[in-house]
Amino acid sequence: MDEILRFLLTTPPQPGALQSLEDWWRQHLGLASRFPVTVDLALAGGFLADRLGFAFASGYHAALRSLFTGMPPDHRAALCATEAGGAHPSAIQTRLSGGDGGGPLRLSGSKGFVTLGTAAETLFVVATEGQDEQGRNRLRVVMIDAHREGVHFTSLPPMPFVPEVPHAELELREVAVSPDEVLPGDGYTRYLKPFRTVEDCHVHAAFLGWVLQVARRSGWPERVQDEALALAVAIRGLALAEPTSPAVHVALGGALELCQRFVRGLEEWWPQVDAQTRELWERDKALLGVAGKARARRREVARQRLAGGSGSEG
Figure (cartoon, rainbow, N blue to C red):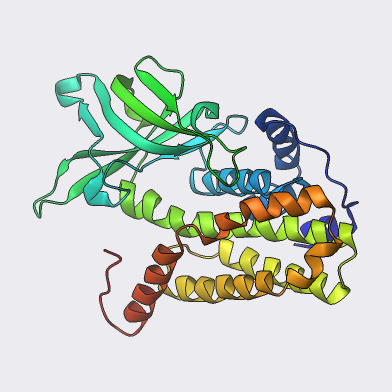
């Protein structure tokens, strides 16, 4: 941990102007070789970002790298889960079929909201193989090349916040899949469900790295800088813990509440920040509220399970 702390405390807080997603990616790749621990990569990527959007991109991609350890290290990747009915296991209709008697596997369906969208080079697609005895979807995750025949993206309009990060709809038309591209394990319990926690940890780490850079660059009080660093260390510890643990969910919920209080306490210091950074923050800060209800529900369910119940996230 010493290396990332020294990086955050001693690197000159002067991020280069990132004019495009390609600029961000080159910078992110350079940091990846220095910080093999993915949450450290998120922290460093956030620190060097010139805006919250590119900090988020580093946190999101580092989260994917944490969960999908076999992904190509030099490829931008995206998790493709959300469909018309959402990302709940019961809503997944994209289908992985074939393979019977040695026949080819095929992937067909559509996804309504893919982060990084057309910029992604590797896709992790959540698909169903059918239903089990209880009528529940049996999910798998398939890793495919984003440029394979049958893969079609439609760009979505930029979001009102962090518009630098593209999103797209995805259509899969009988995409050929090899058996070794079907990842081992249950697609929900091993990948989709823990990703919610892994992403929260990595994205908030990147956010705190970015805030610390802004604080140092703008001359905020040392106590504010120290608080950002302490929160970053707490989030880092949770990112290294088991993401399916109810205890981790409860602790993460508390840490994210502290982050929210910290953000509210920064209002008096933003006037010291340069106008462009301040304007981008006002535009982008709504990002931190995304999925707030889902986080609260996850924390409630975790408390029930720790108390001996069998809560469900629904």
